[in-house]
Length: 105
Image 1 (cartoon, rainbow, N blue to C red):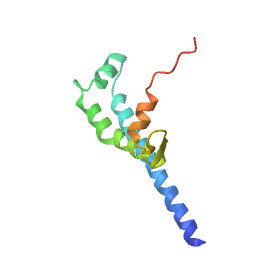
Image 2 (cartoon, rainbow, N blue to C red):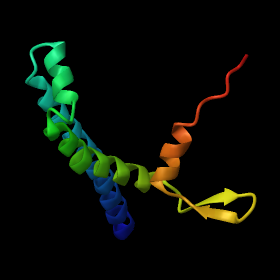
Image 3 (spheres, rainbow, N blue to C red):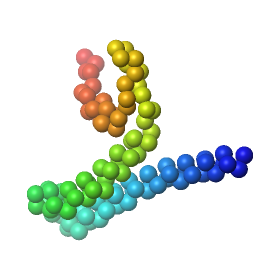
């Protein structure tokens, strides 16, 4: 019984760590934009050509944190009509989320 509780506690801590990683990354990006005094400066800080720091923050902190968070919640396989089952990946979630919605005309 104690082992089951220990395993559950570790799993909760792991999931909490995934959320904390995303939160820390978002805080870093927000603080990057906090230095701006007006909308023009914020736009300049968001342009990775003018401010490479924002691209670095997104690519090295936010993307890996989001990837880990999405990957943690995926089932290893999805049912597929043709092949029977297909491996799930975080990228398939991204692809599915950006497909245009069908218009209800």
